[in-house]
Image 1 (tube, chains in turn green, purple):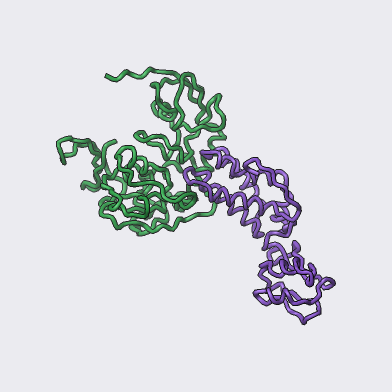
Image 2 (cartoon, rainbow over the protein chains, first blue to last red):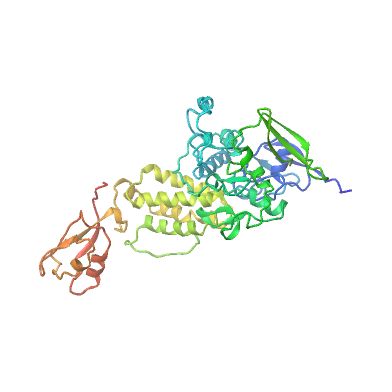
Amino acid sequence: MPKKPKTLKMHFNGKEVSFPEGVSVLRAAELNGIHIPSLCSHKDLSPFGSCRLCMVEIEGMRGYPLSCDTLARENMKVLTDTVKLGELRKDILQLILSEHPFSCLVCGEKEECVEFQSTIRKTGVTTGCRYCPNDDQCELQQLVEDIGVDEVEYPIYYHGHEPESADPFYDRDYNICILCGRCVRMCKEVRGTAVLDFTFRGPSAKVGPAFGRNHIEAGCEFCGACVDVCPTGALADKASKWDGKPDKSFTSTCPFCGIGCQVEIDVKDGRLSKASGAV
Amino acid sequence: MGSGGLIVVDEDTCIVDTAKYFLSFTQQESCGKCVPCRVGTRHLVELLDKITKGNGELDDIKKMERLCETIKAGALCALGGTAPNPVLSALKYFRGEFLAHVQNKRCPAAVCRDLVVYRIDPDKCTGCQKCVEVCPVDAISGPRSEPHNLDEEACIKCRSCYEICRFDAIAGDAITIVPGQTDKS
């Protein structure tokens, strides 16, 4: 039987909390109900540090260390919500949004818009949240609400990638990808296939199989793990793409083989909309 | 300048243009992993470019300073952490030159193409017609052995006439690039 990790104590914003040894500062905060915004971290994946939103202030450490890749230690004193951190997060989120269609996020009419959602939604190119298959289920959208960005001061950079829909199961639109690398890590670390990786660099960086191959040639099994972890609407499975937010979700057992994995079943309008791995 | 290197330049070098040069380098070198470096440096280059083109506003300088701080504090590695240094140093020691670009739409070093005019000094010009030959848009005219005329409207500021005039003994350095009034000012 694995040894139970030791329980240690640390301080978040002056409050003493306990956490199990060996977890990151971000996880320790999560376990104690303290919210630190983050887009690239995921509990099943290794820390990556690309979104830079989970930065915190730690006594005795220089600058703004990332809570996702800093190991929580005994008696650590962490500040998660200072004015300076708020400003930095706001600015960084603005930078993320300048590469991502944001018109609906900062629109003054967004509250009133909900009732007009029955208008054109199934668009080929996503120009705002109302035209995105992931509307209402998007982590970026949620974060903009939480952090409170109401304007983006920078010009928009549209990547101009062609939306990819040639493969049988998924549609991909890397114009709304924020390069958080969750799909890449999922493919490499959890599935062990490493079909996806970052191609090109700097402003031209894009996720995809190496050497310009398509997913089938690169050996993709279409397991769907990348779609499940994507925080935005860049990856969407064709079958449930425009179903919207599910009415309810429940966990069930997959009947496909004898292993009996747990699956998450989404129901929309009394119909099975989507089944994904329960993680 | 960023990496701690020391560069000696004279007053013929525009500091805004130099900062833009350094920033375009770090922007090309950015791996694209973290947001502040990938997107932030791109915005910095765009802002500097805007200023060198004479479209800068006072607000852009403030915006650049804030963006520099965000990139420095937020970038993942030292490349991003030091990328804004050329802009910060330039703003710290040569703020006047930035202000000249932004407020007066004037490049004191006469480097930024959109903020300069080309002039022919009639006293120096020997009328050798070298510049007439190299001008790709026929902006320079005039008979041989008489001072030439330069049509500022037609001039595309390609520098060809300046180069040939400067290094040719006959032509004798009659063409100068001066920080001048442009249609934008």
